[in-house]
Amino acid sequence: MNPFVRFLTSSIGRKYVMAVTGLSLTLFLLVHMAGNLTIYAGNQAFNDYADLLESNPLLPLAEAGLAGLFLVHVAFAVGLIARNKTSREEGYKAELGMGRKTVASTTMWVTGPLLLVFLLIHIWDFRIAKELVEEYDLAEMVVERLKSPIGFGIYVTAIALVGLHMWHAFQSAFQTLGVAHPRYRALITHTGRLITALLVAGFGGIPFYLFFLG
Ligand code: HEM
Image (cartoon, rainbow, N blue to C red; front, side, top):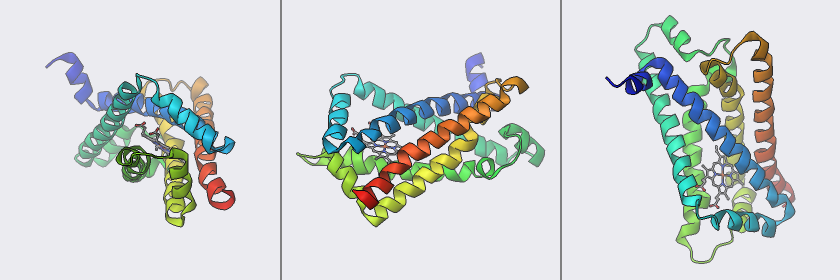
C-alpha cells in the first residue's frame, strides 16, 4: 500500500487529519466571527462586508475548500468512532488521546453531530435561501432569524455547542500533532480556552443583541 494512504488509514493518521482540519476550521470560525461583528455597526456595514466577500473571484474556491474541510473532518470522525467501537476499552481511551476526562472531552462525539445538524440549518438559512430570491438583504435575513424565539434558541444552543466542542478540541489537536511538551501544555490549554471564549462571546453576543435590543 502507498505509505501515504497507509498513514491516512492508521489511527494516528486519522487523528492527524482531524487535528489539521479542526484547526483550519477554527481559523475559519475566527474570521467568520470577526466579519459578523460588523452587524453592530448596522445593517449597511454588515451587507457591505458580505458584498466585499462576494466580489472576490476566489470566493467559490474558498467555499469549496471550506466544504471539503468540514466533510473530511466529519468523515474521519465517523471513521474513528467506528474503529473505537471495535477496540477494547483501554485502547479506546488511548486512541482518543484525550488525557483527563472532562465534560467537554466526553461529549465531543455528541457536540460534533449536533453541530453538523446546526450547520445544515445555518447554510440553508443564509447561504442557500439567498440564492432562491431575486432581491435579498442579508442583514435583514439575519436580524429576522435571530429576533424570532426559535431562531434565537437554535443559534444560542449551537454557539454553546461550539464552545463545548472547542474547549477540548484545541488542546487535543496539539497533543495529536505532538506539541504536548509539558513546557507548552499550559500555554496551549490557555490559548485554546481564550480562542473558545472569544468565539462564544463574539458569535453569542449577536443573537442576544438582536433579540433583546435589535
Ligand atoms: C451569530 C452567529 C452567526 C451568524 C449571524 C452567522 C451568519 C452567517 C451568514 C450571514 C452567512 C452567509 C454568508 C454569505 O453567504 O455571504 C454564514 C455562512 C456560514 N456560516 Fe455562519 N453565522 C453564525 C455562526 C456560525 C457558526 C457557529 C458556524 C460554525 C459552527 C458557522 C458556519 C458557517 C458556514 C460554514 C457558512 C458558509 C460559508 C460560505 O459558504 O460562504 N456560522 N453565516
